[in-house]
Image 1 (tube, rainbow, N blue to C red):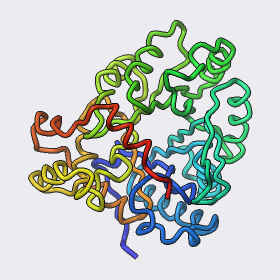
Image 2 (image 1 turned 90 degrees about the vertical axis):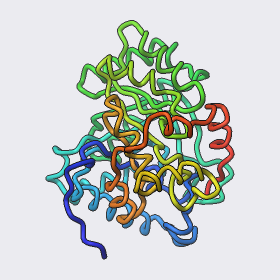
Image 3 (image 1 turned 135 degrees about the horizontal axis):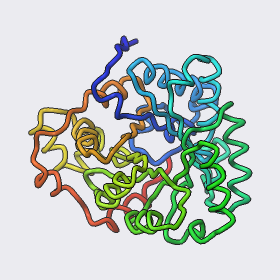
Image 4 (image 1 turned 180 degrees about the vertical axis):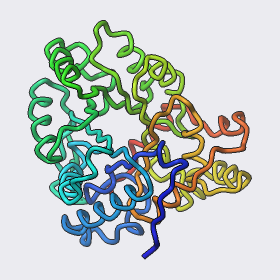
Length: 321
């Protein structure tokens, strides 16, 4: 087993996301290589793996952990890990999300893996489930995947309840997905007496369209968390030949791994408070922490961007595996 040595450079800007560790199926590339066959991804095996990666994250200096109700048993796995390490909680910032329900029944081939519902009733139920699974209140609680078709920003009763939660000291916000991320964020920023002070958005070298809106959120003193910085595995060496050959070439010119270029590019933005890694092995986590701010100029990095609609269409077509 590789030795884990504490790191202090990039670790303070990285968070560990549990989307790929909390359930047997997800849309990231290479899960058979990383996790083995679907039949081997039992609850016990995935719990053990999640605990091992959380251990590594702790010793490497990562102090932000991200989960969600829809990430299978991610909150439960995190809660049992916290229970085994009672001294860690005070040094961690824990974020979770509500608004999606996990329906996969621990099956990779489940026809439906999750269901979205942004209602007050869903919030009340999932807030209780989150605190029970974690054994603690999250520091950050987000509406999961706020999109233009969500009723949440027009639901006065829900917004009032979120204001109450914020008044209790929980940082309330939302995550975004889809080609309209920026528009959703701009609308939320304009709310009167907004309960929100945190956002988690997709930003990566292929899909940087939310950058200006995230800058505005940072200017408003919101917590800004970047997700899917590796584009669900497209910006890694295992997928680059087919998915992002131009990005792989730039990484080679920059003298680092493609995941390092992608993470370093996100970290280089002052508006990005936390950049999430979705590592599922200790080795991946250590590789991610070796990321460096690119020496490649901004124009060459920007040339990798795809039209947002094209990027999200490709993401929507990715199979669960």
